[in-house]
Length: 164
Image (cartoon, rainbow, N blue to C red; front, side, top):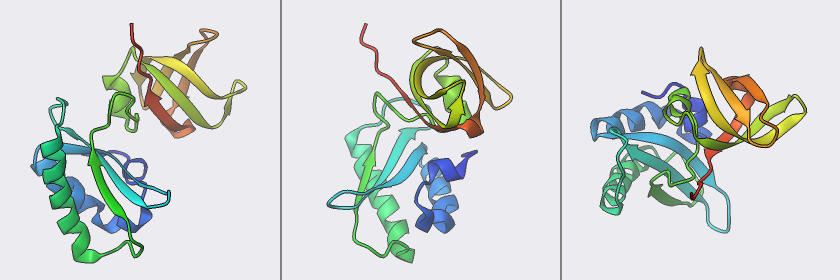
């Protein structure tokens, strides 16, 4: 189940299809991490998907899910411009979208962008220290400041790959 559909489905044209896409993908044993339109020379509709059990997804599974998603999208044809459909894993520097993602990656280093400044910071790297009551406690990587932020203040977050 997706708690914050607006942050997961970042393509307004697909709002009415979101419940069906979520349900179909969940039934197949996967979950949607994020859906967004990447604007470049070719528009790309990107579905980031992971297994429900959180184990790695492979290319064959992405191809299978691409066919399922494509059939659902073709029924309504809600996106009028031409686009490419991409189905992929979230990758090693995956976006952190939902509250459960913050809980899952507690202790990890993340890159954070805020909606507005908090203690003169709008972008920073920090460790996820704790999660409680839809708030996330971060420890800033540079100055070790502890910040307790509501999810609504976080515009964008993604894991930072640390090679030890």
